[in-house]
Length: 375
Image (cartoon, rainbow, N blue to C red; front, side):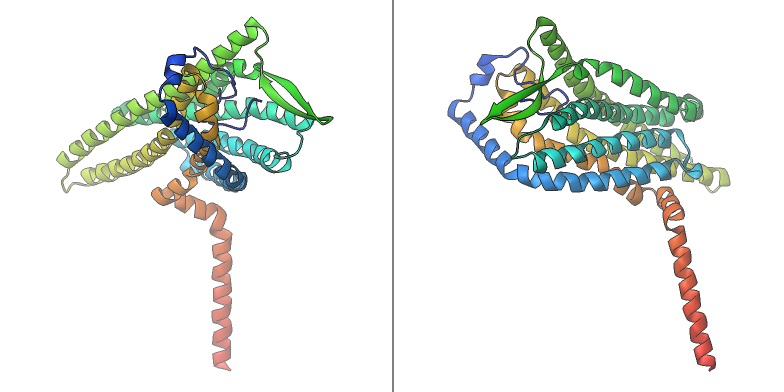
């Protein structure tokens, strides 16, 4: 049975490997068997925990990304970077919103009971939808790093090259191209049933019954492994190194310009704000890489080593899922802790009425106390 629940895999629904290598898979002997047994023990222990942890993380992540979107799209927060971040909030929120019912249905309701056809239909939707929105998140992160690098590398022309309109166009292009790239994944599945004791369970599986289906399966595997995992990670690594180097060069120039003139003070403040924003985005990218690089490597090995998916990747699927979900929902915490403008805007939008109410109650209490003292 294919397992579409692993949003980390995107192509991890294959029960067979592409370009298998029996020599690699046979290496290790008894030591390899001990590792695999350990992974199975881990999976049997963590799976029940994941069934409760994942929905909680999803609820937090959906709310957090909704807050991100409302704050980042407010008038005083409008910028090319924040436009892309708001798009990232939507795709991350949709990823977690789709995972929540998957976790409830397949870790609780139908974990030990037969899966009806309705659940199989949801699995088909989830296997297609989750891959699309997660892939959009990945490439929006790459776009974000590229926009930031261009902006700080060419500060004079950065505002024109990385305008708000181009940021919106980037989100549109990423979404359309990603949906086209995910077409092989969307047509790779079929419904399958399993009957035992006159009880039928329905699942989805990957089509492998014709040469065309096998070609699409292999095309999907390499598309997802290379274009959705390894290539974005490679580009983000390069862009991160370039961003750090450019920040250091800008800091050196800033120190040379330090003097007591007003213009230098203004430039110093502006550069400091730019560096803080860039550092925050670098942390976002770093957390993304820590989550996605191991997944990309394991996914690639699943395609070249016989039995690697079943024996190694599959037992680690839930762990990679929870790490990806946490990464999708943690940006709100980063923005609040590292951006004063984000905190102030959040307070203004969501806590203003509460603060006003508190001030009114305080004033009323003070007025009452004054009257009592007068009496």
